[in-house]
Length: 79
Image 1 (cartoon, rainbow, N blue to C red):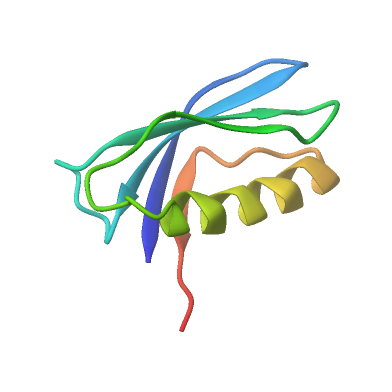
Image 2 (image 1 turned 90 degrees about the vertical axis):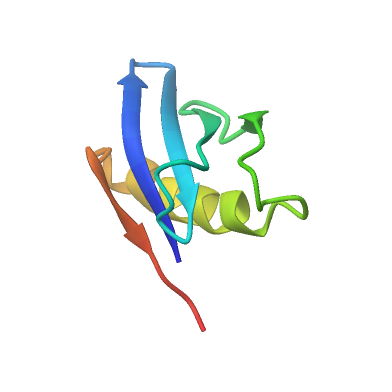
């Protein structure tokens, strides 16, 4: 599971903080280009060495971009 919180959103970009296993002491930051769908890990969260948590968040950001609504925060869980 990865928790996330919106840091900023504009017409061109959304920036989120993310938290592997919802550990608020293990913050990373990602950015998402709303026009191109380009993904960028600005800072890797501790515990996300293989970028699997940010990958799952980016999939959710693809969904947000399709709907046009970027949520303030939440969780992504998988099994």
